[in-house]
Length: 86
Image (tube, rainbow, N blue to C red; front, side, top):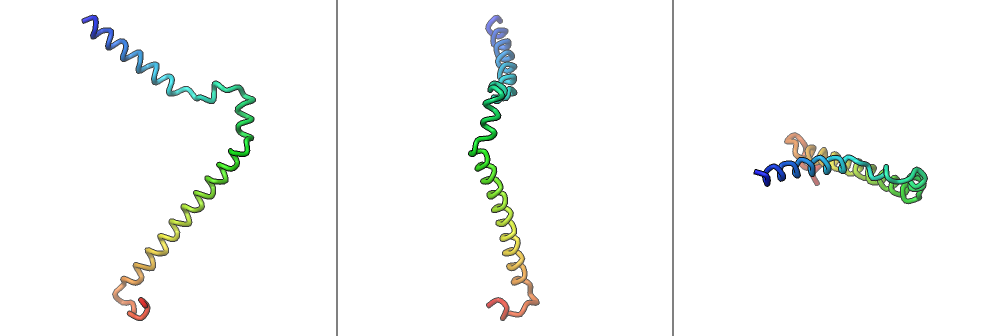
């Protein structure tokens, strides 16, 4: 009986501690000056530029897929002249 009680209490305490530690923001432990210096670092600007490029590229790829799909659907219509497929 004592083993089960200890096991249950240990599990509950471990769960509560794990939940609390996962909620903590690691940046809270840093002094404000370090956070500001990290925000001004050139790598952050480079990362933001990379994110913008990736987002733009993803939209361009979506547009290209939509154009290709529209072209395929146009070619599959039964009323289209066969010469347009060449």
